Length: 113
Image (cartoon, helix red, strand yellow):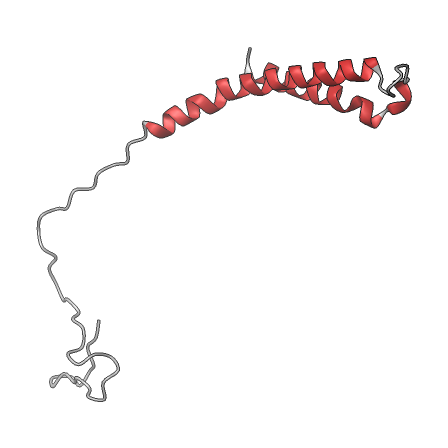
């Protein structure tokens, strides 16, 4: 059964299951306990058909999806092995909250990471 067929089975099962609740005037009460045999039959068949549709949807869609997720391999990014070159910012010697400031003597700029 395809996924589209299974979805149709599920939707038809839900219509059968809820039809007596939405249209009670079409299901006459003929039993002594106040129940309708046709309403009970539709509820049982709707539950059976809906569960069969859900089972096929799970078998067709959810199981292959979980297998793909379980076998998913993320790419490995190896480091290049060479150090970074160029200007590297270093943290302040006494920290950011200290009262002392670090001033570069050449161009009077504060260098901080």
